[in-house]
Length: 103
Image 1 (tube, rainbow, N blue to C red):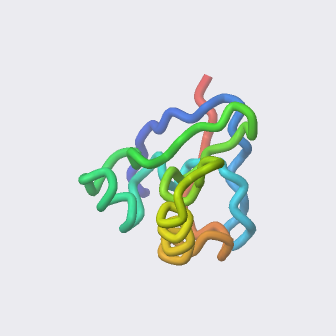
Image 2: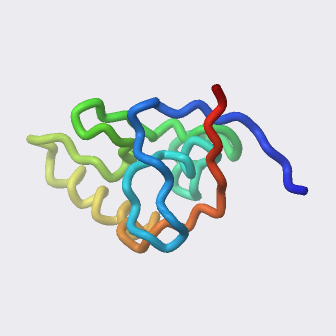
C-alpha cells in the first residue's frame, strides 16, 4: 500500500479532475509537491509550492508563475508564456494522486 499524507485544500476548491482531463485549478498537485519550476521558485523539493495562489474570485488555485496581473510589464507576460510551456499548462491533469475528504 502506498504512503499517504494530509494536504490542506481550500474548501471551495474544485474536485481533482480525472487523469488526463483538463486542469480545473484543484491545486492538489502543487499542494503535494512543487513541479520543476516550482522547485526553482520555492527553493524546495517537498511540500506545497510557494508559487501556488488561491483565487477567491475564481474559486480555484492558480500558478503564480503563470498568472499575470493586469498592467504587468511585457517581460512578465513573456515569462508567463515560458512558464506555461514549462509546466505543460493545458496538457491535462498528470497528477497521479487521490484526494479523500477528512471530516
